[in-house]
Amino acid sequence: MSSLDAFELRGVDAGPAGSPILKAIDLTVPANGVTVLAGPSGAGKSTLLRLLNRLDDPLAGEIRWRDRPLIEWEPTDLRRQVAMVFQRAPIFPGSVIENLRVALPGVSDERAGHVLEHVGLDVDLLDHDAETLSGGEAQRMCVARALLTEPAVLLADEPTAALDRTARATVEDLGRSLADSGVAVIWVSHDTDQLRRLADHVIVLADGAVRATGHLDELDASDDQLVRRSVGAP
Image (cartoon, rainbow, N blue to C red; front, side):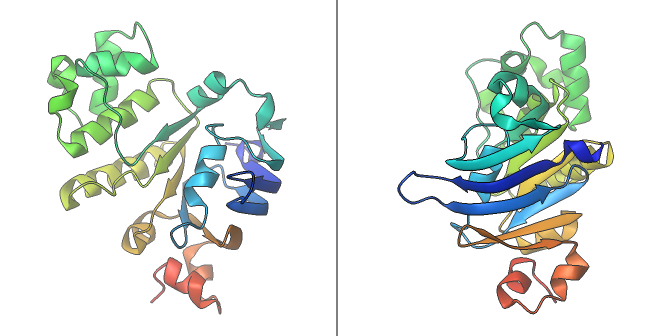
């Protein structure tokens, strides 16, 4: 990815009009590797993530991606390139292949099977009722669904929070693999152990503002105790 693929936020307010959660945010979100959004509950991490594929629009300021204001992107077109995976995997009635076709109608069984294999699921699951999947399988199916549109960016809003240890490790490995293959991953996490396993870059938010950004070694050396707690500094 080039530097143009980074998200640029300038003077961004977001959240309820009467009491914005994010206030006057100036920030560059990297366009490579895994960027973890960290910080206390209510700091604005999920709000920031939702801005990046126009699930919400800012109250003020501008967000740019690929040298265009995000507001100029048609939301459906943007979401094919900036996909999102949620904490609770949204499952639609029907089979796994029918769930995948929500993202890409008419996708062939062959391609759908290939993307399932890419996220570590068996091709034989294509005809299974999606509602019978385990939590970890459902989350990986949702990642597969997002990947069908070949996104440049994957947004992940605490995607392992509802999973057991084994499923969590599998989804983390998938996130790392995607980042290594060139998909920029932007991941919200409250889990400092997970952050330390995954993060190439960290953005710490607190009270609706950017408290710190950088690599782990930089933030570990911060004089700000909130930053150090947010990244699990030793």
